[in-house]
Every structure is written in C-alpha cells, then in structure tokens.
Amino acid sequence: MRINNGERVMGESPVPHAVLNLKEPLYVGGVPDFSKLARAAAISTSFDGAVQREQCTLRPQIGLTSLCTLAPSRSKVIIEKAAGDSEAIAFDGRTYLEYHNAVTKSQLTNEIPAPEALDYALDHSEKALQENHFELSIKTEATQGLILWSGKGLERSDYIALAIVDGYVQMTYDLGSKPVVLRSTVPVNTNQWIQIKAYRVHRDGSLQVGNEAPITGSSPLGATQLDTDGALWLGGIEKLGVAHKLPKAYSTGFTGCIRDVIVDRQELHLVEDALNNQTILHCSAK
Image (cartoon, rainbow, N blue to C red; front, top):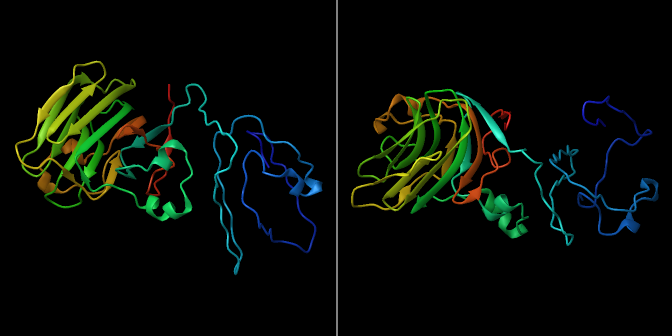
C-alpha cells in the first residue's frame, strides 16, 4: 500500500494460502450489512468523503472467474470534481483517440446501466445522424492540425471535421453533395484556452470560436443526414482518404491540449470513454 508519494508498505499472508477467493461484490464507500464482515477487519462505519478515481484489477487463477463490476446501491452517492480539476488531455501529433459518436446515458451521468443493457452499451454508436453538436476547449501553439473527425473510412463518404488551418479553426462537413467550409476569424495558436462550438442541424451548420459571432453556412439541397461508421476521433485519424481533397492540416495530427468535450449536449469522459489503447497524456488545466 502507498499513499501519495510516501513509502510503500508491504505485507505477506501466512503460508500455505496464495489465492484470494472473493465470493461477494466489490463495494466502495461501505457495505449494506457491516455485521457480515470478518471481525478481524474491525470495520463498522461507512466512508465519509470523496473518491476521485478508482481502478480495479483482478488476476483470476486458472479455473476461476473474476468479475470486477460496480453495482448500483440504494445509498445516495454524490459525485464531485475538485475545483479547477478539469480533465485535460495532451496530444502530440501522433495521439489519436477514438470514441463512439453517440455516448450512452450511463457513460455520461455516472449511472450504472442495467445488466441486460451492458452488451448494447458497449457497442452503442449512431451511424446516421441528423444533427451534430460539439463543444470543446483547446490550448495550442500549432497552426495546423485535425481536432475532431467523424465519418467513414472510405475514399468518398460523408464526414464532419474540425481542424486548425493556418492558425484558425475550420469546420467542414459533407453530406454527399458538396463540402461546406466554415472559417473562424479568431486565431487559436496563442497557447491559451479557447472554447469551440460547432453545430449542424440537417443541412445547416454553425461554428463559433471564443466570443466571435457564429459563422453559419448550409449544404446544397439534398441529403440532411450524416452517414458515418459510428466512430468519433479526437486529435487526428489513422488514415484519411485522399479523395476528400482537404487541406494538409486535416491529415496532420493535433498538437496541444483538449478538455471539456461535449457531444450532443452531453459530457464526453476523455479517459474512460476512449476505445483505443493509445497512451493518454494529461496536461495542466490552467
């Protein structure tokens, strides 16, 4: 056991036992009935305070099963963030994080989904979208780089994207007829946090960076939905089809920090919701 940066405290159980047999659920903050706990544990009251982050790792033995699941309880739980403790992720131009482009209610509100909904939630994404609502804050000195992408991995396909081009944010989307390009007038390569709001409702799009008035545009008559493969990428994308004929900035990875990401008016948890196994770097939220 180690607390903060203190020395590690070690211990060892007596021989011959070497396996921990856990037949009960994992509880955090207390248990339903303290009388059922081992007397040697000498625990009779629940924890009063805040838990910021929890990681559960179990290594099952051969022939045994291991389940590390947080189950709902009847107790009232208050989930809070420390003041100023915003989750900010650093991107180095080679860090591409993948998410579902629609995030389940349980992911966004810290609710625990019903058991029968777990399989569905693990693969929940929307592939045909009538609307897109993105909000996020960035801090960068880069003049080029792809911030966000959702589309298909095909050469010619629908997509919506946010990128920094020559120091300014561009929002580009194509519903299958002709790309719409909205360009901000606010420089963002200032190494200062700035908020971006990008919306699309059917054919109409809107981009707002900082305190500028929204920049609007509309795609030609025709399709109103965005057909995607269900993925949302932050920081870049592994491979961008050359047929999109986008500026080089769209095939350049983003370098800087991203935080406060909102997808369809719901918070995206940048660490917990990531689907790929890239090394995630954190940066100061200041």
